[in-house]
Image 1 (cartoon, one colour):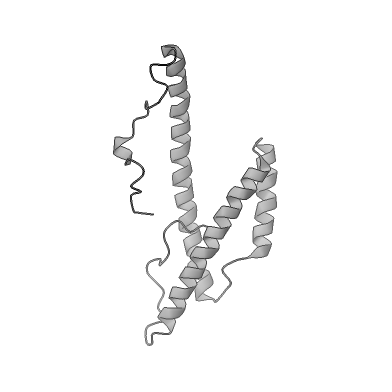
Image 2 (cartoon, rainbow, N blue to C red):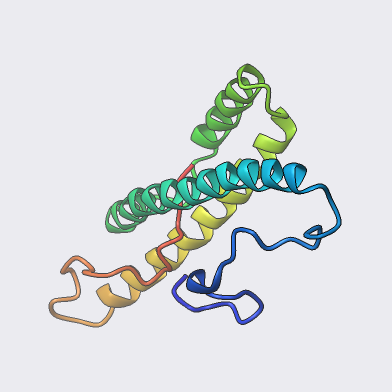
Length: 147
């Protein structure tokens, strides 16, 4: 998603020490809180970049599926992935129900994006000569992910 959400400030104006607790708690507690939050901020940034890499890969899956007229969803893979991630979540002491909800959200987005890629691919094929050329850019946002 390249559009800036107007409800949130841009990254350049992010203040890692922003807190409604400032001045209300002991400075040593505030320093520890900000230190922990700094680690959380680093993890969040890592998650965003990891998801972006995943999205790039699933975008390729969407183009491959469209080119070969494969369905956007793959229920067998989705079921296996959910079971696998629930197991991993348990091993990591993360709520498996949360992990499943998160993956189901991703799967839904993947399918939506793959359907859009397929529709655009089909439209290109129906537009005559040269229509069978591979699409050079994604019609779907770069947030598509494949389960």
